[in-house]
Length: 156
Image 1: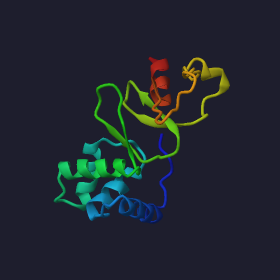
Image 2: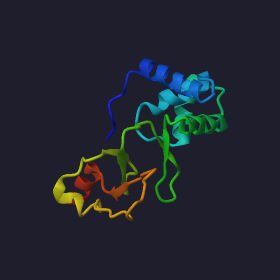
Image 3: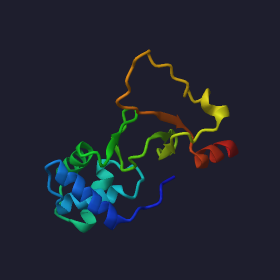
Image 4: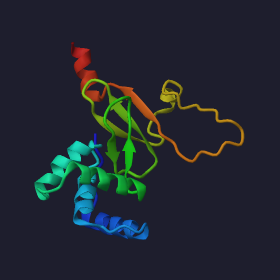
């Protein structure tokens, strides 16, 4: 499950402005790494490296990691961690959670409020924060079987 690809030219312009405001330059390497993330399929750094290497054959994996770190520091992407798996990178900056398929490894965005009310308690969405708490970061993850794996599991 992926989100529709956005207008890369407008996205790159926004990325350039954001990176410049943080005191960084929008290099060709950062542009290609950013464009690879805009496919919104939660790639690992190695996945991004393999995509970018097609356009920039001389790029190193270390450079890709540095670019990803810079994009995350500038708020243009975020690292998504699950269990002991390699970090994946997400360019969707809207509030959302992630769903991890434990069979095929797919990662999907779960938009805020996407669960039907009947599943809210089952999914553990009824948090009771301490009185006066201020939330500065939220990271929610669901694990299970994606629709394809669940259907295959039912047939087995």
